[in-house]
Image 1 (cartoon, rainbow, N blue to C red):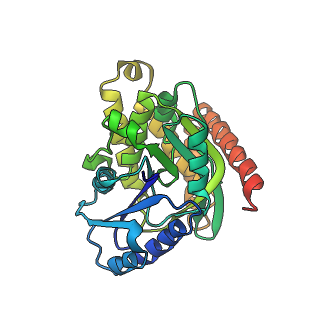
Image 2 (image 1 turned 60 degrees about the vertical axis):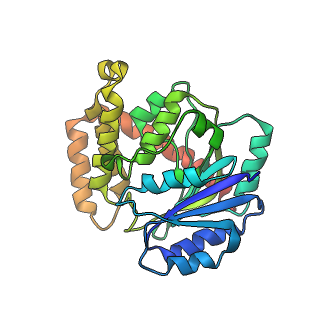
Image 3 (image 1 turned 90 degrees about the vertical axis):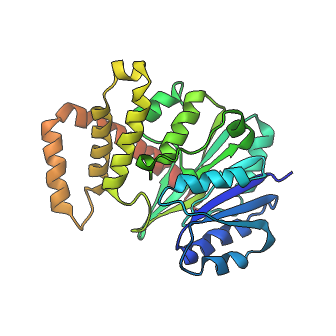
Length: 303
């Protein structure tokens, strides 16, 4: 039986797709299949795919801007025991699949998520996901996504048993993964977070999540959907407070950007002045996360 099905949606990213597929081809563990779902690219994507041989299943689908449709088709076409998601502009370390295979044999798991190197231009950071929590669904609601799509592998039997696919709601586009992992967390599952980076995620101007306004709107749509049929959330929490955290986190991330430093600093100061207590609590939370990422960056920087 095929151990891993690697699902890669793509659109007009031939050069990046080559880098992505090369990182898969170089895996030390070879029992896998690659499923590429091409949104009718207009570049030489099909020629790139042909260079990588028989392990690749190549399908075309017009997803009309809803990448969930492409990932869902990949899930339906997959034959592997485990589903791995990989965006066409991201890459994996050569030992990733071997590491996952070893972990799966050692314990009964439904989902595994590894840390990633994150590149924004020339800047290199390490993002560590998770950690596991008693009420993981609630933490995901309050603090945002704790998984990375390109860093996550899910047992196909778990998806099949729970009839899980990505939502194809157009209003969720760019945050369909957040909704997907929220629904998984709500069900309850055996999770494993790996603090070692097993891949690299690249931000660029064409990334689907690069557009802040669009992503923010989708994030709110996902929150409203999960609040709509959950009386506990409605009674105890406020969407506006969660969105405030989302916005303030973005302000903090952009604060030291030289391009718009004065503008960002003014907006940051205004927010801090209007909401001193809430902002201070969030600053502490973000600082702790930052230190955690720095700790693992130092630990794994030689890899």
